[in-house]
Length: 305
Image (cartoon, rainbow, N blue to C red):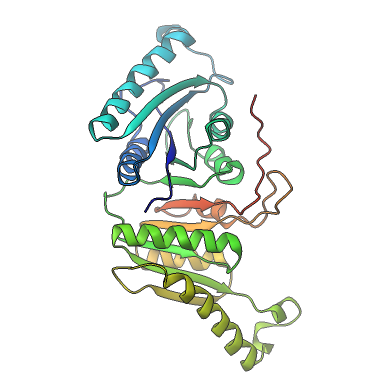
């Protein structure tokens, strides 16, 4: 897979009551390992970035001042750079003070990164880097694909792509297929069926011919994309009627999915405007990693200073 060439890695160095710990938080370690493997496979460059968020907290005297903390964080990131370089990956590091999600998005824009990868933090006193609202804001506002990783084995055995048959779904499908091809994963493709008639009628009133025609068009659309890839295992395609969120959660649990790839729903031309974002709803409820892809023309409201 030769899709990503300039990867930004959001690193979390906070732990309990410490602003900078000697090692990245466990979720970040998973993201770092995944990023190095991906960069090595794609001959991509990496930037490890830690945002020291001091906007709403007072730094205890025992931890020193901001500059001392920045130096400590830089020393930790320098070890990550050397770790990547030892594996033949071009890498650099950056420490900045500010708002975590905002500075990461600004960095994406400034250096034209094509992927942001970071670990999700579900526990911790500060809940700093990518817990809750920060992860959600990255999903909602970051212009490039966002990969929020969970600690897991190196191999990605099972991938689920949610496909809405729209252009952003096509992008998610291409990425999911490419990942499945590279990792020799079992690929599952899910489409939540919604007939035009369902806007004005009960599902039970949709004619049999409409069901048949819609299913045929959906199968043709998905099959055409699958033909472009040499998958190690035949893809399993799931067509179901109902709320996408509940159906996706069920599929993730049923097939023990390692990675879920999906597109976000947005109105292009309206900066940061996203509605019905299933990716945001999924993040707190699933244990797998998630890659969220933005539609073409998406504009983030975050501005470079």
